[in-house]
Length: 454
Ligand SMILES: Cc1cc2nc3c(=O)[nH]c(=O)nc-3n(C[C@H](O)[C@H](O)[C@H](O)COP(=O)(O)OP(=O)(O)OC[C@H]3O[C@@H](n4cnc5c(N)ncnc54)[C@H](O)[C@@H]3O)c2cc1C
Image (cartoon, helix red, strand yellow):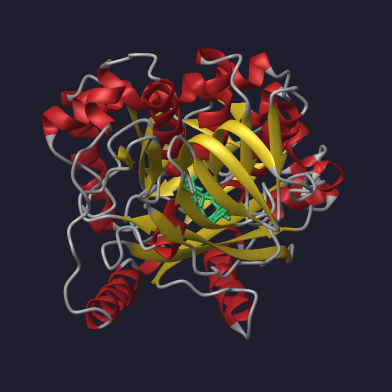
């Protein structure tokens, strides 16, 4: 008899700026109040789980669905990320984001579909259209070494036939309103998301459908196979389900699946308070923008305004990767991070802005050795869409969509399925925890080498 028991997982409760912007909508669904029967039980209310639910509604409209989330949708990583939906090669392990040519070409075509899936959900459920802005991104260099990377990356994108435009310092200043960067490549098709608003309002809309029950603060604790269904211990009750979809990202390891094969990481963000009238006036002539650092371990920046921030102007900063899983709301972690974010902020805006940070938070990522999300049928009727590999706005959306096709047996054997559905498992990672410590040292060194990019 198949049996999985889930160890309790920690939850990062650091205060998320994105959910802070939509506080009035951040009302969690109640936990599971009674035993239920359903066609599908989806575990995890992140991008993968919600996309799986939204797509199941389309391909299997009469099915009943229970989705359980151990914390609050919008306060999880899916709601805490920086919102860059990067449809282009973005290999975090390469010095210039480039990967293998043929695979990158196929994956770029596929990744563009993730943006379409989110667009379609926004339209279908009447969510605020500005949640997803197709305004492109700047991949920008602040040092001579990184300028080389930008040029290499631009050539690579051109060889793939992707739309991109190289900008020099003056042109960047005209686009962003700051004079920090020397060279950038602008890629117009990258989309920028308000992540918490997307997952929260999508969950609210899905939860209003008759055939979906969404329960939050409700953890899958154990899973047992009955002859023709699964019995899941969920919160304080049981769900009998025909099929299970695990969309719980790195939490899968707590079920004893892929044990020792996943790399858990944390990364961190800060969001300023609203800029005062005089300071925000400087940005009045600039559209909102998003900058990815040319050095993969550098600092990501977004300028936000308009409907996203209730008409105020704010700046988002993200940097620092750490191996391991640690609740960043504990101890002095956030204080140290806020200090580091402040340095990055002052380097970019110091002479112009002195606005303090209102929020600093951390969230988790789950990486595998092959760098792809894992979509597969683990056992009969037990499916998974996990391991975001740090780029879940795209990867997990694709994984969730694909797993819904797989589980509903709608027979879609398209390019998405061919590329995503895998038969194997991530490679074992030897010599834990020494390998984690080595990776942490490499990250620290890399971040040090990132210099002004950080
Ligand atoms: C600060 C930060 C910035 C980032 N920036 C970007 C970015 O710009 N672009 C990008 O693409 N990605 C970014 N990411 C990564 C992105 O957030 C993740 O890749 C994405 O959230 C993964 O989505 P997911 O649905 O696979 O997993 P998650 O968002 O982790 O969702 C999984 C859910 O499963 C739940 N769960 C786990 N175990 C159980 C259980 N036993 N029972 C019930 N529920 C369970 C968890 O609580 C969680 O809510 C960033 C992440 C962080 C933290």
